[in-house]
Structures are given as C-alpha cells and as structure tokens.
Image (cartoon, rainbow, N blue to C red; front, side, top):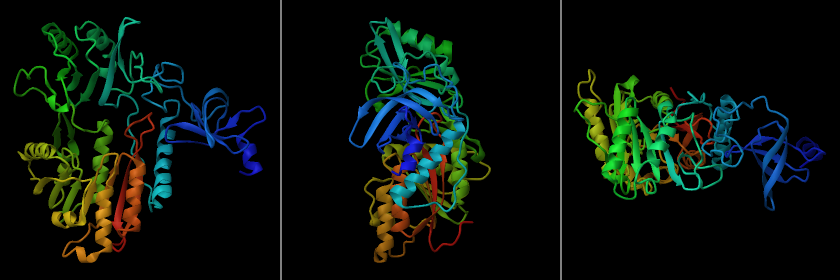
Length: 474
C-alpha cells in the first residue's frame, strides 16, 4: 500500500477511514501498515474508532466504538431491536444504511463476483429490482425458547452472533399482522403444557391466509389444541402442526367449508394463482416476486413457436407464466413429489382460461448430476429459465459446456439461444457464468441485482446469456 493510501485510511489518533462494505455488511478499512480490518456497524466514507475482538495474521475484526465523520447514507434503524449491543436481533445487518445505498452495494457485490470469480462482465447492467422495505417478509422461521430465569417465552430470530433467541416485541420486516402478533404468541406458548417442547414456529403468508406451523417434539394435549384453536380464531391465522419432519406437516383443523380461502399467492399479470403448503419453498417477498417473474419473462421473450425448459421449476412459479406465451414448456425439478405438485398447479390454472396455456410437461431429474446425454434426451429448447438453490447449477452449465466442446455428442440437439438465470447466490452464479461464457459459447448480455431481502446482506440477482453467434438480443 502506498504512503498516500495509508494516509487516507488511518489517522494519527488511531481512527480509521472506512473504504467499502463487504457482503456481511461490515465496513472495510486498512491500518497504516496495510492490514485489513472488518468493522461491524461502520459504513463507507466514515471515520471511526474501533474495538478489535479478533486478530489474525492478515486481518482483524472489530466493532465501531465512535463515529467521528458520519456517512450521508447512515439512517436511523426502523426496528427497536437492531443494533450492535448484546441481545440485539441478528436478523438484519443493514438497517443503519439507506435502502437505496443497500441496493447499490448489492449491485456492486454482483458485479464484483461476476468479474473476480467468473471473469465475466455483463454487457448491460439491469436496473435493480426493489420494492417495499418494511413488512415484506411473508416467510420466516422463528425460534421459540422458554427462558426459565426470565419467566418468559421468547419468539423471534437469534441474537447477533449468538445462539440465544432475541427478546423481540415486534419485527418490522415481517408481515405486519405477524409482527403485531409476536407478544400474543409468546403469551400463548407460555400458557401451554408443551412450552418446553415447541422449538419453532414457521410463518407462511399468502394473499388471503396467514399460516403458522408449530413444531412440537411431543404430542399436544387437548387443552393445548384448544388454546391454539382459540388463538387462531382470535387472530385470524391458520394453524398447522409439525410433529416430526417436513412431511408430517398437517392442518390442525380442516377448513369449515370447501370454498374457504386457501394458502396461495397470485401472479395477476399472467392470470396465475399458485396454491402452496406452508413448508413449500416460495419467495419470501411476494411484491418482489411478481416483478421478478415479469422481468424474467420479458427477458426470456418466449415466442409461440418456441420450446422452453424451466430448470429447478419448483411449484411452477416461472413455468406457468411461461406457458402463457411459449409454444411448449418443460419444467424440471429434483423430486417426483414436487413434480406431482407442479402438475396439480398446472391443472388448477388451466381450467376456465379464455386463452389456454401452452402444452406443459413436468419431469424429475437429479439436477446436480446432469450429463450431456441427459441434456440431449430432454431435447432442444430455444430458451432456458434457470432458477437454482444456493448451490447453483454447475452440473447443468458443465453439461452444456461439454456439448459445446464435443459437437459429436449432440446429434441433432441444439443449445438454447437464450438463458435467463435467476440466482440467490452471486458466487455460484459467477462460477456458472464463467463456464457458460468461457466454455459453452455464451455472452453475458445483462445482469442486475434483486433486493428480495431489504436490510439484510442477502443478494439475489438475475443474468441473461445469449449464444455468442446468435446476434444481439431483441
């Protein structure tokens, strides 16, 4: 590090100039000798004093003790349980940073990952997708603990850097009705016979129904079941019970009528309604999901004469909207059970439409062991939609690269002209992008961040790839 750079990052009084923010929402600074230090609670362009709590040969970690020059992007956190103090909730890391600056940092994280991990630079940066920053979280897993010393039950997220449950009275990022329900829920569980054996409550909110899944390690007494029913009626929530693994989840009581509202979310632009179970994977933020699906389909640009494959299709979040414009659709997932659920959702959404959905099929594959031969077997598709879990789609990208480099394996099979890749992990997206661009014959024509989880360091994103010889995108 040059002397000029040192003077900009360390001051005679020992305070530091914060240069940037990492993916864990820690400020990054350098000491006068060039050693990097990660600082909880610090923001870029601030001058801060730091208390170091961890030292390694090449780096240190610490916490802000004083701010001598404050960032213009620092804001007052919207949650009373946010902070650096002992007992603070660890569910959010960026509430002290203006939401617009959060989005800009996530966009930069995406760009840096693409370049440093994949040696890929998108030709166009998409406008980040953003939306409501409070009350957005319609899915959450809340820990439950009976604390004998305090004589209370705590329900919420874990404390910052701790295994203990934070003492939360509200949670402004949760669905507003659930945030207002935290204290009544604590009182409910405290009054139950099973307060020692209920470790978790899972939230799943749809457009009309709020479902709470109670994990219980022992059978519930009749008195406890009655308490749950009374709470559900008073607060307008639907109770589900989970005595063992996810497959054991079931409704506490069946709906009183066949036409009672069910747990579902809508994609109104496509005339699609997606029923789901409370333990199914669905997007946490329904407002962002609607925009995400709309943009993905616009970028995919599926035409009536084209076949599209939706890899990692889940319940059909993208598959069914694609079927409103494509000529044929194949949705592929990892389990037969999930594929069966996708077919049910297809049936529900096919009935009574003025314009029928395109012919749509679903199939189960081990998507982490894809081979060139399996790609050829699944047939040519002009467009792909790829929406993998955090592990990414390495096997899929590698099989595509192998077919590009060994044309004799293809037969009459042709690679997709365009791929829209929706990612919840910029590192695995960058790894797969490197394969697609450097070994499979694609260009990265566009990429952009998706702020699915405001106030957290979680980065979702979207990237578009085109065959290098396919010309510019329409």
